[in-house]
Each structure stands twice: as structure tokens, then as C-alpha cells.
Length: 412
Image 1: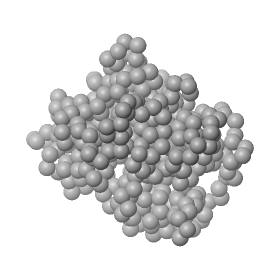
Image 2: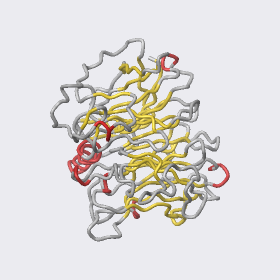
Image 3: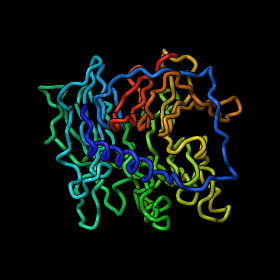
Image 4: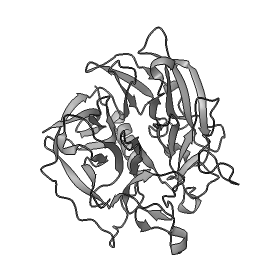
């Protein structure tokens, strides 16, 4: 892969602006009252990184096809989804939406695709869904945040039909260019969509506004056109409230997953100036943003107003990490010390696990990487394959510029 100065700068802008500056304030003062001491790695919990591929420029998400073909699909921020089969990245993209991306703003973090997911019945209906920034419908906006449905070619299982696009959801608004997070189907067959609320002035944030989709987790039925509202969504019939909302008060719920055993929805909530947090999302839950960040108040208010906020499972400050990246509960075969634990990452290259004790309390441990790359590793996503084995996606900050990498976690 060739890197020019221009390419390196673009990758740097994408990495820093897209994930750090847009999501975390790295120059903020430390939270003295709730400061965490840096963790010492528990040597009983250690892993190695096994390189899967370094052929994806800026990998942002990986999914296993639910069709028993044993293929892995990796999304590139630039707008392509590539197929990884038998350890090799196929030369032609599975999907290339670069022509559909925002064109007015040429920055890599705005002209971008953020993630994708397969329909639960993908093996038979060949449908999958993509989240990306499309051109703005309103001139004053930078883009339109879109969730679209696509279909795979009946003649070539490794190629999607670009013209099959059917837009499911379109979101306008100032700052929406940095609000895309993740889409995924739950065990109930409905599509869950996390939308951020992090790129506008604090007094304009929409996390507590139930008439806005920003700062929310949505839950919709895409088996209807363009979609339907599940009958048990919590805010159906509530005045001035969007019925798509499943939970609210979230700044940027980046990379979530469903526990295969308990079916809980869990993920990383990226902080602004003070705290990173891990949350379990509950029906109708209010997670506090922009009044509260992690377990710390951002806006002074009454105890009565904050009494209904759902407490995070775990939080940490900037001495520990800078941007949380949600992960998955581990039930694979290769890492027995992690069995049943929630394993997640931070953008700074750190790995952690969360364990629930008999009292229902969650404890965090640092997970040691015994063969960490010599170049700084910036983690963007934390995913798993069909066997529930864990992978991290990110970029290496090399002397030649940023280089994408996908690693599998294996026994040390």
C-alpha cells in the first residue's frame, strides 16, 4: 500500500477528527473527584494479536455473513465493504457506495460510511443495511445521515447491487455528519440504530429531547416499507415524542452488541470532557446526556431531575483511556480466561474486560496484549466472527503514515 504525505494527512484527519475530536475532548481538565488510578494489567488475562489483514485502509466494522459461507465482511470508512474469505481480501468490493457519499465536504470523516449489518434472514432474502453520510437535502446542512437497504446479486454472492438501494431512514440537522454510530439487528428481529449527539454546542444538544432522533438508540421494523414501529416500543402515543426511540440521553453510543445468552444490549458510550462509560441499554432508559457524562454531572440540576438516569456499568477517566470502543461478551473456545466476560477496547489501544460478581457489581480489569505492535495502535471497532472469537479493527500510526489493520485475539 502506497502512502503519500497527502494520504497520511487525510488518514490523520480522519482518525483524529472522526473519532477523537468529534467524540472526545482530549484537552479537558481531569475529573478530580472521580479519578481512576491507571490499571495494572492482570497477567492472568492476556492475549496475542494475530494479524488477519492490513489491506483495508481504514477499517471501521467487521461482520460475519449469517449464511454459513464463513466469509467476513469489513467496512472501510471511505465507502467500501470488502470480503475476507479464507484469509484473503477479494479484489472487488462487495459494495462500493463512494459515489453516493457526501460530495460538498471532502473531509474523510464526513464523506464516510460508518457501518453495516446483515438481515437475520440474509441467507434467503439477501438483504443488508448500511449507514453512511449522503449529500445534504438542505443547503445549510453538511450532509444527510442515511440508513439504506441493499440486496446481493443472485449471480454473484460476493457482489451487492448498488442500484438496489432503498432508503430506510434519513436524518437531517446541524452536526449530524459526526453522529452516525452503528446499526444491528437484535434477537427480536428488529433493527437497532444508535445516533450520536456530539457535534453541536452544549445548549443545543438533543439527547433529552424526545422529539429528536439525535442522542438516541432507535428500534424499528424494516420488514415493512420504509419501516414500522414495533408495538412494544416505549414511547408510542406520547405527545411530541418520536416512536422510534428505544432509549435516550446518549452522546455517542459507539459499537454495541447483544449478549447471545442474556440478550442484553451493551456498548460503549463515548464521553466528552470527563468520563468514558459502558452501558446496558434498557427499554425507555435515560442515560443522562447532556446533563450527565458517565457518573459525573455536566450541567448542575436537581437530584429529582437526575433520579431516573440509568447508571453506567463502568466508567473511567482520561488517565485510563480517551474514547471507549464497545465490545462483546465472549463465549468462544480459544480464550478460556475471558469466558463470560464483556471484553471491550479504548481508542488508545487498550483492552479491558468487565466481570459481574455474585453481588451484581461489575469490575474492570486491564487485558494485556503480549505482542502489541511497535507502532501505536488506534482501535476503531471491536467485533466477532461466527464462532464468537474476537477481533479488533484500527489503524497503526507508522512512519509512512496510517495503515489499517485487523487483528484476531488469540491465546498468549
